[in-house]
Image (cartoon, rainbow, N blue to C red):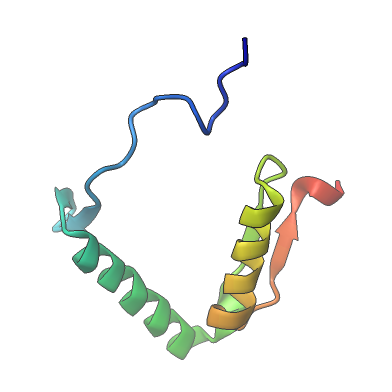
Length: 88
């Protein structure tokens, strides 16, 4: 019998994004939530530049997940501030 993993475990998953409004979390559409994240990322990039961002990866992530994360940081954000606990 195979052991359940974090990928197959039927734990509850996020189905509706929550956006903080007036100090409270409220349900939002995926388009609204992702639009807010995009706007905040762009504002931070404009104000502080790409070095304001960093990524710390987990050793339990798959190679594919780590590759996608570093690719996003380097191409979309323009930051090389990437580290992982794999090397420690």
